[in-house]
Length: 214
Image (cartoon, rainbow, N blue to C red; front, side, top):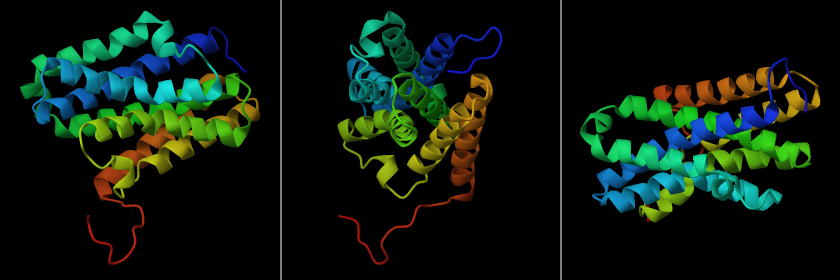
């Protein structure tokens, strides 16, 4: 895997994962607070949101035991985010726009780290890009299922598409031999900007005409 001076790919992956886990865990804990769950329930949703996508990725690519179970930092990040959100939820809850930005940021970070790790384990370009998308959307899907909601990725919001696009950029850049930090930043920025524009402009994925909610 290509590197730049002073940059260790393994360290880059860990940092990206931990940042993504923390910000995703905050969004999971917020859902728990709004559902009226106790501290344990909020921590479960925080952990599921923060670790679910990476857990699925690691199991699918054969990186076992998953990083979430092999490194204590991966467990402490969602615990810290969950407790912080639970005890300061009035302030956090008023930051709706900030939470949306955090969620978009987590999505962009995870799609990049997921694709990079899949490439590191020898997957081809398309499977690696798909693993990047799974890493980005997997935790949120599990969170919504546990909270009794239709997952965001199925509700017409442009969520999975930006993640897949960011992961594709990472895969193509890595295959072209570009510096890893340049590749990671480019993929993350594309995903982040696309997702934020979709929120701001209310862009929606196509849905069947005349479909009714069940």
